[in-house]
Every structure is written in structure tokens, then in C-alpha cells.
Length: 103
Image 1 (cartoon, rainbow, N blue to C red):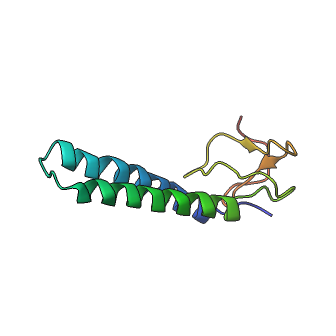
Image 2: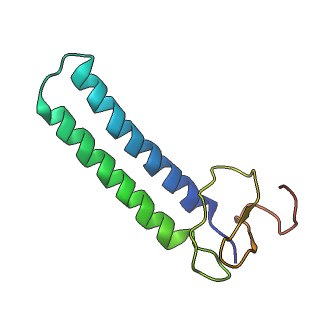
């Protein structure tokens, strides 16, 4: 059983949106002169919403397929090999081979 790259990419997008919702409304509030507190409220609510959705999906869909205890780090594309901190086995995504290539 392998981790799904689709869910890893969804989690990455949600975390990027959380950062954008935290930074952009605050920049509009301070730099663009939009002095309404609605910008700050929208930024906080958007950031918390996207962040919590990303964490929930990561914990639900990116678990170690061997022990099921640890959540894997979401990766957009192949790169550094990840290992489960609990069972110390290599974690593979569905678009990777099962060979130990990469460090």
C-alpha cells in the first residue's frame, strides 16, 4: 500500500492557501489603506479554515501504510525519501517505485 500523491498535493495547496489568507488581507489592511477590520477577520478565518482542513486531510489520508501511527510529510513531487519515525520503514507514494533510490 502506498501514499496518494493526489492527497499530498491537496494538502500542499490548502497549506499554501492558509499562508496566502494570513498574509494578503493583512497586507491590504496595512499597505493598501483598506482600514476596515473586515480584512483582518477574513484573513484569520480563511487561514484557520484552510490550515485546519489541511491538517485533518493530512492526518486522515497521509498515514504510514505499515503502522498507521505517523502522518507523512506531504510532497508535491518525488524527492527526498521519507521514513516513518515510528516503524522506520520507507514511505512511497503511488507514483514511485518500491526501490530504495534517493536519500
